Amino acid sequence: EDELTAADILNTYDAIDLAIAADDGLLRFRHNGNRHAKQDQRADGGHDEARRCLQPGAVAVLNLPAYAWMFSAHDRRTQNARRFTRGEARALMARHGFRTLRASYWNMFLFPLMLLHRLIEHDDAKSDVREYPRWQDAIFSAALTVELAIIATGISLPFGGSLLVVAIRED
Image (cartoon, rainbow, N blue to C red; front, side):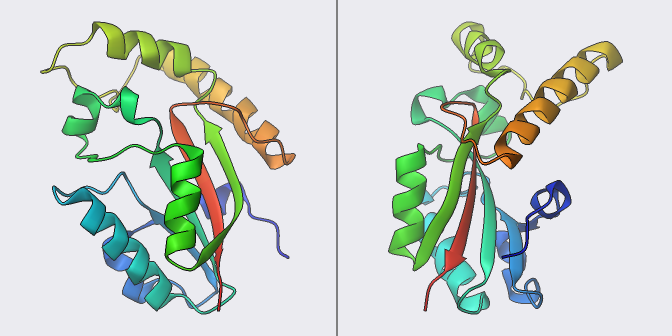
């Protein structure tokens, strides 16, 4: 099998764009927590669409928000309707004809800061997704680079604010 690179993971498509995405057999799309009100129906629809657009043996890479108990103003601001555990993501993929090859949490090093922010934020708080001072962004980027290197060795991180799932479409 070909190795997935960081560029493969970062080159993503939204579920809406699946119909035009995957001639090379490697589909990269964002799930983004089912960005619509009918969350379970939308999740099933997005994964059904992924299955329809992918040939058997094609690979999908998903970046999902983790842990329902972390749902907050950030999710409302970014239109995430759902967060997942590793087991929930695996079950969702299996239900739609995908076999999970890898599932790792990430944002592990930043997780304590995310948790603290969730504990003290108000319902009208801004999203975490915004520009930070250059020095702070450099620290966050370094932490994520270390995590990506760990995940690239085959180690799955035990927790984090996000979940990376690599799955293959079965016949």
